[in-house]
Every structure is written in C-alpha cells, then in structure tokens.
Image 1: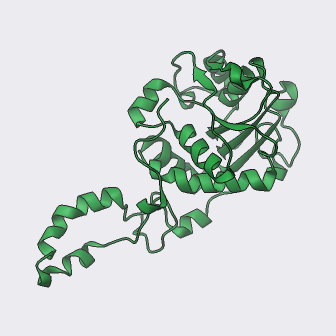
Image 2: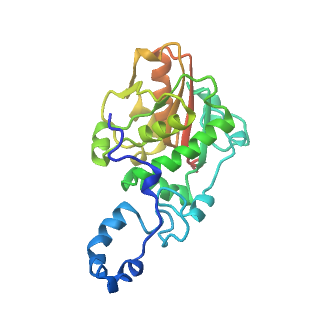
Image 3: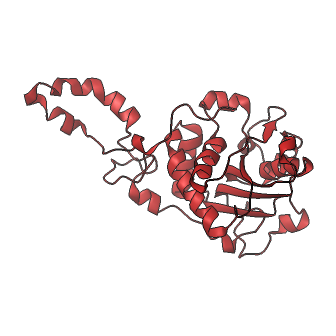
Length: 268
C-alpha cells in the first residue's frame, strides 16, 4: 500500500515569495533568475490558496490561507448520527436504525461542502498531499474532543484501490491515519486490503454503492480482539465505511469506530 510520495511536514509551508520580491533583486544581479525559479517555487511553496485561489496573505498550513481554514463548515459530533456522523440532531439516522452498521461510534470533522469540498478535492484528486499534516491535526483534535479513540488499540485506514493509489502516488486515508496517529501517539495499522478493484463510489448512485463494495475488503487476523478506529476521507452513504468495518468484525475485532474528514449531507 502506497503511503506518500514526499514527506508532508510543516517545512513545506513557508512565507510566500512574490515575483516582485524576486525581481526586486535585479540590482544585485539576481533578478534575471526569477523567471527560472518561479515555476519551481510555485510547485514547492504554493503562492495561492488551494481553496479560494487568492494570493495567500496569511499562512494557515498545507497551502491554504488562514481565512479559509477558519471558514470550513464544521460538524458537531453531538448533533450527528452516532454510527455514520450524518447530521440528525444526535439520534441514529433512519438508515442506521433500519440496518445497524458494524461501526459503533463515528465522528466527522466537517460537512462535505463549500471550502471543505474544495480542500478534499485538492487533497484526493489534485496531488496536494501536503494537506495531510494540517488535516491530521484537525482529526486528532476531533478524536480527543469526542474520545472516539479512547481505549482503542490502533487506527486503521480504509484503503483505496491499487490502481487509484498508483495514479495519485499515495493513499489519502493512509496519510490521514499516519498523521493523526502520530499526534495521538497511537499506531496506524494496515489491517485492511482490497480484494478487487471497484468503480469509484462517487461515480455510482446511492442505491448501487452498497453492492459495489460488498465483499471488497479483507481483514488481517491481527484485528482479532482489538478495538479499532477506521480513518477515511469522506463518507456519503456509509457503504464503504460499513463494508470495511464488517470485514474487521468478521476477523474478530472487538469494536470498530470511525473517524472521517467529511460527511456529505443527506441525499434528497
């Protein structure tokens, strides 16, 4: 399983240097180098926010400005379904009451919309793996505030398919779990694997998602007797998350919880 193609560390986030600042050194004989270094500088130190695309006046981490981090649509875990994190006022949602999932507790950082939707797209589809570090900070804070990792033995990322990981160069859920586990001083264990390639859930209607991932995960025997916290980037219908949790429970896990970055609103 691919983890990362370059270290996601705070050192990637440094003060934005503008073209004017670079070319201002022309009198010292260095201004002519600005056009040569500017493309490399834009790649290593993004000068525009990944969310609002405005020149970053204030640094917020991961190539996102401070204002956009502050404006993300957060979720109150106390006002969400305890199994799938859908905003419900705190009671289990109708779907989880009808089909009780293998996830006993779940918490999501924010609502999949607005800036968080843009940020998630940059992280998962546009190669912004440097977002893993600041996102891990927020997931770790959520885990502490909800005590969802209390007494747990390990974090377990929900793996993407090998083909999509090769295309990206990294597995988003693995990066999130690595960073979150480091901050919580909790091990990250790859106890799940994909048994087959499946079409992206985002490309399927809600009614077909459960069947798409049925039997798509296999769990290691090392899950037996453990309390585990699944980590994933986004939950829509819960089909993928619940299939992963079911595989862990069938392998003997004592309890399975979930910590996710974003929860989509209830479909119409």
